Amino acid sequence: MNHHAPSTRRRALLAACLALAWTPLCGCQVRRVIELRSQPPGATVRLDDRLVGETPLDLPFVHHGTRRVTCTLEGYQPLVRVVEIDAPWWARFPLDLFSEVLLPLGWRDVHRVEIALEPEGGELDESELRALLRKAETLRRAGPTGPRPEQPPPRPGEEPSP
Image 1 (cartoon, one colour):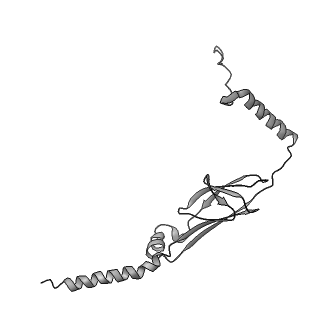
Image 2 (image 1 turned 90 degrees about the vertical axis):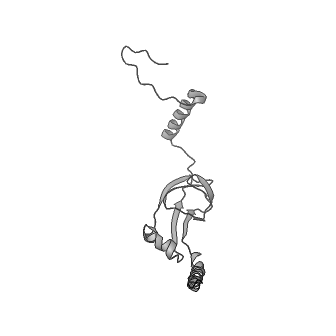
Image 3 (image 1 turned 45 degrees about the vertical axis):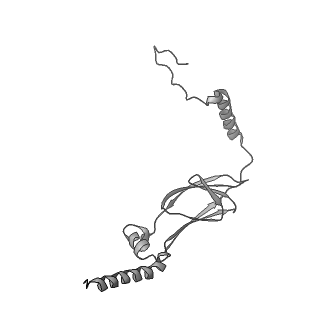
């Protein structure tokens, strides 16, 4: 006869009750969001070269780190910004073990990115126009393969390369 069976059953029942009691808290995980706002609103947003939507935009994310945000809007100059998404104190090792696993209390990690787009300038001044025309002429002469880097002058006694 096994007299340890009731004790084992009690432990299993206690473990099941604790797991069920802890289950509602597991839904309270950390919410990480990048809030992207632009002035004017309605700009197309690319995050790390991936199209993600139009501003205003609340974008969930998983990992902290450096992100490249690109915003474009007709009539405005495109804007590229590198944004550092830093982890809050409670999301750094070893505290993240407690805040995300043992005590998932519904932490919120919100990073707001404000983008001010500049209207496109329709006029070029004379020096900008000359520089643009020089670039265009260089590309025209280069042909379909593109411009070649300039060759250094030949050394004395060397044949010039074609």
